[in-house]
Image (cartoon, rainbow, N blue to C red; front, side):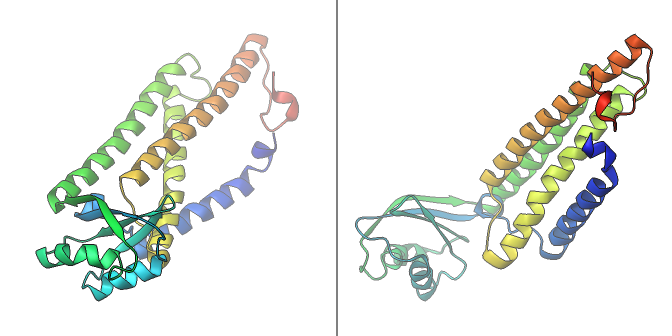
Length: 235
């Protein structure tokens, strides 16, 4: 197999990628969104033409809402995220999103999340990721309990978790860079995406491990020993 034969190259590329991801997270940090820090989420639908994104952002700044993030949704909707708004900011918000009435708009959703709730969501997200990793280790150790030579079944689980950590660090590092230079935010949708990545990652890992298990069983039954780097090692 080419991956085994050139494992040093793949390990080097993977190591560099993970190192850059860790460096990006350490240097820039993650730009947590309203879901985790607390703040205001506003969904605005425009009746006719939707103004440009920078026009709405400038209108919000002129109204005193400095830290607002404006993101498009569908063809006529903007999702606006900002810190906790004061009473005056809330009053001026309709006029600000309509750019002084030039672009008629309707606020369809207005949600405020307190910092306590945001912290609780962040803690629960971390707990969810940890529990998923532990469950994966236990599942793989149980599934591969009959194939303990030459590698213990628990080692399979540990390898799967290492692969999961790699698959989480890379998108997290990318979002650290995007958050620093483009304002991308980490929110509950990002956590859902990470959980989806975990699912696909462990599925791919188990498929590979299952093939390894078939090869090991074939070698044991036939009393032979083959190198996995050789194309003829597959049974």
